[in-house]
Length: 186
Image (cartoon, rainbow, N blue to C red; front, top):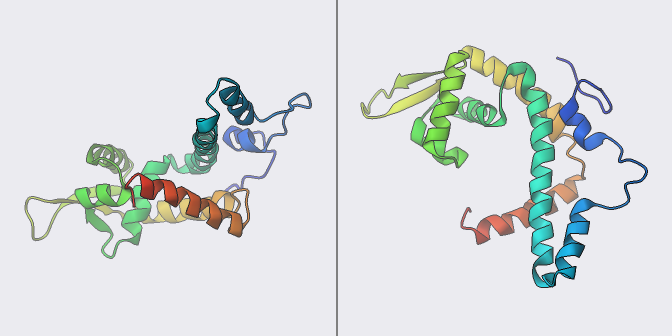
């Protein structure tokens, strides 16, 4: 497996967040947007706008990194998450609706991911052994190998270096959880 390093040209997604800004670039565009919000008379919500826009930008940056790492396995992050969930399960299988609940996505999204993973030979649908109304999605041996390799790559190239210290990472999760609680997500 090729390990991605800062500055490697072949990883366009990785360069997106590691490249140096042009020397004439003086300001953070999101900070500039906040200033514009304040100048327009919306100062009371400018912090919220800046927070939301910052989270959305970081989502783009991290998703680009993750998808660049997963590209050799032809996995999207959503398909990786489903494979990892199945690999973590006791039997290597879950009812499709339970997978949907645990991944916090609509069942149609999970069904689409399953179809793509089935085509690649990484999962299969099997009847539930005791409930004829339920279909299980089950990881294959090839799926286990694939998700284990992809997990090692993500751990090395993304999760092990997200651009902040462990303390900063914990503080970020705590802040994000406040938003999730406010929204009824947790």
